[in-house]
Amino acid sequence: MAPDVPAAQPLISSDVEAVLAAAGGLVAGLPLGREYRVLRRILEGTRAGVAVLDTELRFLYVNPRMARVDGLPAEAHLGRTLTDVLPGVHHAEQVLREVLRDGRPRQLVATGFTHAPSPPARRVWRATYHRLEDEHGRIVGLVGVALEITEPSQYLRELERAQQRMALLDTAVTRIGTTLDVEATCAELADFVVPGLADAAGVELFQQDRPSGRRGTPPGVMRLRRAAASFAPQLRSALREIGAIGVSMEYEAGSPIRRRLDAGESWMHDLSAGDVPEGPYAGRVARYRALGVHSLLITPLGTEDRLLGTLSMIRAGPSPSFTREDAVVAKELAARAARALDRAVRYARDHAMALELQRALLTEPTVPHPNLETAFRYLPADDTTVVGGDWFDALALSRDRNLLVIGDVMGHGVEAAVAMSHYRSMMRALADTGLQPHEMLQHADRMVADAGFDRVATCLVALGDPHANTVSYANAGHLPPLRLTPQGHPEIVPLPVGPPLGTGFGSYETVTRPGVPGGTLLLYTDGLVERRDEDIDESLRRLTRLRLSPRDSLDKIVDDVLAQLMSGPAEDDVAVLAARVHRLTRH
Image: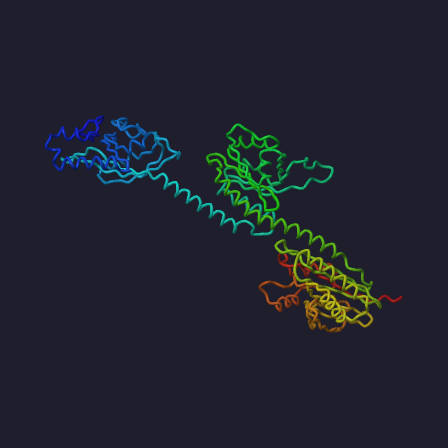
């Protein structure tokens, strides 16, 4: 329906006195005149933008506030549609037509930019539209009242993004560093940032130079090796080759990336720009561009005292480019992840050192007399537990006797492995003194306590005398031995148990049992039988249910014991020593 007033003419005059004069001198003194003046002051003084539209959604009137917001004089609005005047603002014209049709007011949110200069690239308004009718009930158009809410909306968006960042960082604590494995920790970090922060990510760690005879790292060049990578599904096939695990990354001294990393800062690059970093990185940039990658962000992974590597992230396709805000989040995330990664790196180094020391010390035991056959195994714990201090030995003594020793130092790591070597050396020295088994343990206990050594150890000694056909035992807090009879029956040898070595209060007893001609004696550490959720008595009963053949070789018997008792990776170190007596050879 067409409006009753011309679209190109103002609906409300800006000249109040002229309007009142045209209406007749008497009108100026009546309440109607006063009401008109009040209406003008309200419309011109309000901070809300007010506009009147005709039934074709063309401007009939805008108040001064609306004109300032739009950046155009009021006269430039008249007779033109919303889209004509403000092409940069999204208007839900269909909703406005529904207000004209049913008369029910609507509240809308409009976004965009106007002709007025404004810092934000996109502004936000909340407007309410009402239908206008004349005194005869005819529809003449709409009146809209709008308030700009750009700053509150920006604040809410910033608050929401801040909350998302905090949630992201808080979640990282529980998702990254769940193991002490370096590769697994790197994979957790890469998987965590995709797709929440990037379309693809890689974690690179410092790479040692190649062995001699092959090309090493050039002087001044930082070489990293990709330890983990993660890709959004749409990029997996395209980036698999250049983002593969194991590839090397090199950053020359003085390059833009290297300068940022050396300063502990992130490096961000927009590939849509024409500049390309110099050095080996330039070739990768060209390949990235060919695959639709447009934004890169490389963040150092380091602790307060050392740089471990980098976290590299990319965005491609429709994803927005990285921003300074993203760089701040990535840097904080990398700092938290670096602490977990540093623990894993230090653990890997300490574990390798302890394991190497343990294996070096657990060389083949001293060769016993020919009348005793031995077999042994040492299994380090699974990587989730640091290597321990298990040890064993077989020593040849005078009068054809043989001494078997097995022990377990409290604790784990390099310190436990070093302590194990002290205990082993001490027991070897005591074996040559001719002492009885309980006297050996008493001397060892006192020597350790007097030395102030803070690593106690369990220890079991078994002294075999083939002439008397006996085995004499003494036990310092260790598990009892297992005897396999010539008929194939496994039996626990019951022994009194004294305190572990190193307490200084040791009181031990030698117990002599008949030998086992044709049978097998098995000494072991607790890692073979103990389980976290099982009583130790039940663990020992499992030993008596082993199915073993006494006629098998000792190596076969030991392997069968491990196969039947070890269903998975060892929770603790395992040491097993098996011995079998042969008939004496007379000369």
